[in-house]
Amino acid sequence: MGSVTFLYIYIIWLITSVGAQVISARVGSTAVLPCELSNTSKPTVYIQWRTDFAVVFERTRRNLYQGERYTGRVYVPEKQLLKGNCSLVLKNVWFDDAGVYYSYLFVKRRKRSVTRFIQRVELEVYG
Ligand SMILES: *[C@@H]1O[C@H](CO)[C@@H](O)[C@H](O)[C@H]1NC(C)=O
Ligand SMILES: *[C@@H]1O[C@H](CO)[C@@H](O)[C@H](O)[C@H]1NC(C)=O
Image (cartoon, rainbow, N blue to C red; front, top):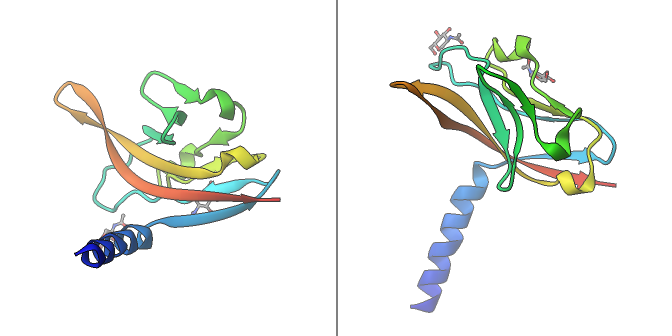
C-alpha cells in the first residue's frame, strides 16, 4: 500500500519535472528566461513575469512595472514581444534570484483583464 502511494508520487513528480525548463546563469551575468507565445494567441505586449512571491516585470495598458528587487534589471523587449517572444531578460543576476519564474499573458475577458499562464522556467545561479 505504502509503496504504491510512493510510486504514484514518483510518477507525478516525473510528469511535472519533465515540462520544467531550467536555465543556469553565473552571478553577475545576464540571464534570458525563455518564453514563447503560442501560435494561436494574438500578438500582445501586455505580459507579466512573476515568482511565487512577487511580480518581477509587468507591462499593462497603463504602465510598466519592475518589482522592487528587480528595478533596472529586468525587461522584455517590445520588438521581440510583437514577434511572440516573451523571454525575460534579467541583468546582473544575484544568488537570491534563483527560483521558479512564471510568465502570464493579459487577456481581455468581457470588460476585465485576466491573466493566462504561459510558461514556467527555473533559474539556477552559480558562482
Ligand atoms: C502557425 O501554425 C500554422 C500551422 O502549424 C502555420 O502554418 C503558421 O505559419 C503559423 N503561424 C505563425 C505566425 O507562426
Ligand atoms: C527572444 O528574446 C530574447 C531577449 O530579447 C533574445 O535573447 C532571444 O534571442 C530571442 N529569441 C528569438 C528566437 O528571437
